[in-house]
Image (cartoon, rainbow, N blue to C red):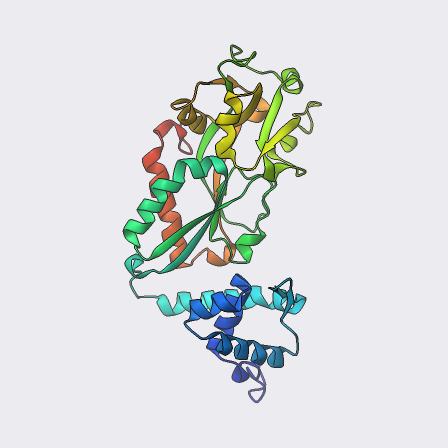
Length: 321
């Protein structure tokens, strides 16, 4: 199709790369202060850019609700396209230039289920900061019925967990496959059991992470056609408290065997095999499609795989038995 050259990119001529970067950062941070720091500008300069955006788009772009910037529907619809365009330009401009992790600065945001955070947080942080000393590594909790919206909004660079039912548009990679087991105190009345059957689940008092409360879980999905269910009657705010809770109660919980065995080194706990329907524990790394070719994302995903491969025995890697 031939474009009328007199109208070609007329709106782009009225904007600038600086303005688009400001919009992208405001969408990420929802904060004038944080955007000013990120772009090395003053807060009044960011406010002026926001005023220009509002005039250009003929839309408020953001409204203040409880002292927080909340994007309008127009801003939400526009951001994905702007972000993809900026990422495409960054990729094109970076072609042929060496990627230097040592020059990276800023924050890497990793969504992690409690179990994988226990396993990966320390070694991954050390590995990332060895290559990129200027990076800050921030782990965020993702549990229960995980919503991948944060990956699209760029508030999370990637997420790692036992995710199921993710939209197909999200690229993913299996980090490892494990067996989920029941975990309880060695003094628990059922501690000498080697295996729980489906009929046993309703007779066990189950502990879960508070983020799972009121949400559909992997357990719900796994048991939906079995006629059985698991009733969680206690929730803790931090799953790192789980072994302490188990030691003082007659509750049980579940976790991947690899993590359970790590806990058993420090706590007097017992492991019980779960019904077949609940055993699969496939740890996935998930990221936004817009970051599929992003060099920072490629580097980060490669570092995660490198650290995981250094921690796991061969039998737990995908495709190994």
